[in-house]
Amino acid sequence: MKNNKIVLGTANFKKNYGVDKKKLKKLEINKIIQYSLKKNLIYFDTALGYKNIPSLIGAKIPKNKKVI
Image (tube, rainbow, N blue to C red; front, top):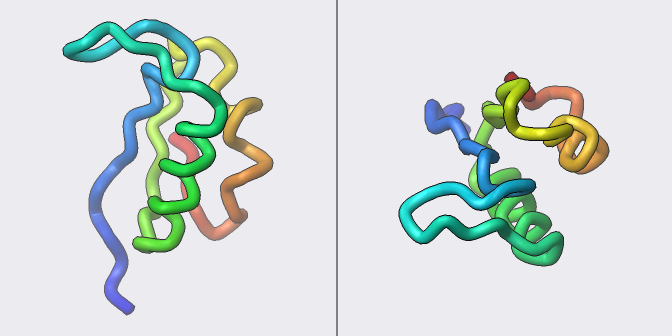
């Protein structure tokens, strides 16, 4: 399977962000992560300003994926 070159931004996983200034609930975050992994997404954007996103999603992301 060919690798996907899309990066999933995670800014609104822990804070109000985006067009509708919405923070996602844990269930929504889990669904997004599972769908992303199912579709072979490789990169997850977790900038320092995103408030501990790596700790929130890190355990859910396999080692062969990249948390950037």
